[in-house]
Amino acid sequence: MSLLERTRQLHEEIELFEDEIVRRIKNQPVLQEDKIKNEHIIMKLNHEINQRTGELISLYEDKNGKKEEELQMISGNGNTTDLLKIFYQGIEQIKNEFKGKPVSFIESVGPSDDIYEITIPFSGEEMNGKCIDLIVIFNEMINLVEDISQDDWKYIDYIREFWEWESPQNQKRRYHCSCNKWKKYVNNILNYLISFIERSQPLFDINMNISITKKQFSDEQINNMNYKEEVLKKNCFCVYCDKKFSKETVLESHFKSKKHFQMVKKSEERSINETMLLIKELMTNEEMKKVVQSTIENLNLKMGRTVKELDEIAKGNIIDEIEINEEDLENNEEIRKGIDNYPIGDDGRPIPFWLYKLHGLGTEFKCEICGNKSYFGRKEYEKHFQEAQHVRGLKCLGIANSVEFFDICRIKDALALAHKLDVMKKEAEFDVANDEEFEDAEGNIILKKDYLLLQKQGLI
Image (cartoon, rainbow, N blue to C red):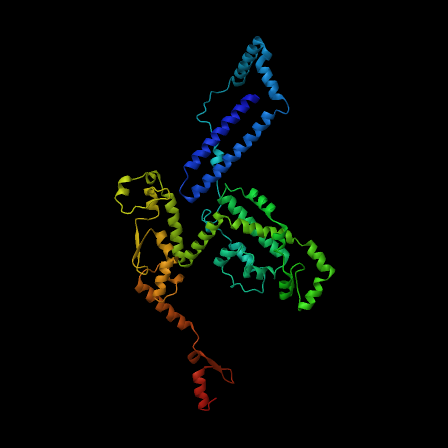
């Protein structure tokens, strides 16, 4: 293929890829899985355009002079006879090249099928990129320091503030943990976040964002995250040497030793601080804030459901995504006009009827606690249990909102459940008068009231 033909072909392919990108941006899918797949295809198409653009630039630069030679050759150097001779030679060459080969027709010109073959691996907890799954890293964090209780930081609270390095929970672990352990921990968080963003937000250039963010970090920002000596003294622990000391005076003398200064120099404190700042920067992204909020909401819902209910919901979600077919995508104007208060989308137009059915917006849920307010669709109904109006309604009944009251919408049921929980709480409490036990000289265990009665009778 001649250089001129290759140049023309590259321009044509770039235009075809651009048209495909525009078409995909205009026709955004509705389902989360299809949205992410569509963005990955757009990213691949953009990558193909960049490759061909780079090749075009090198062709136009013509550093080896081959393009100029080809132009001179096909122009015939101004001689009409030579020009026609070259033209017919080119035709003869093409005929000889395809002689004896079967005739084939190109049905369409465009991106290859490989671009559309995409498999995006998400765990079940990630829900196709809607939530983050940090359970493995959370377990690693728990095991960073053995002396700290494992129950002081719940998973849902960890998701809410794991990147807030100044929080008491993070500070507690950082000042009791060696540099190597902490470095491995924060690197695991960063690697997961990069992997998650690459899978769930393919159009977000994570590598460029990280390089720009690193340049913006000043020495003051990084140094401000250094271990505070007064905190280390308070805990009698040196993170650089990974040693715990019995007294603060011993630790102070250790800080002045040559061995300590050598370990401080070897410490990768700056890289650790850079990693921590990068994690915080990534988590302040608007998209990641939405993901964290979605993760917290999902965890709250799961806490109020049984294993059987979770299995049924998971199966229901799969069915919802599979059962959307072409018939559902058609707008049924007659049905929409017959529904009162038909929901309007963000664009000011009525939402598609298939979406109306998918979210069950035709199903009405009433909540007595909220003053018989109606909620349309299961999602809105479940969401309202965390809203101020429902919490205030429970407070008026003298009930504190908790997971046990999820899906309770009748006042009678709420009061009955509150009474039952109070009874269970009282039964679980230790009754000193009835449950306290004494031990006699022979080692027999006797209830307190029986022990006192036997003592009065002189039997003990």
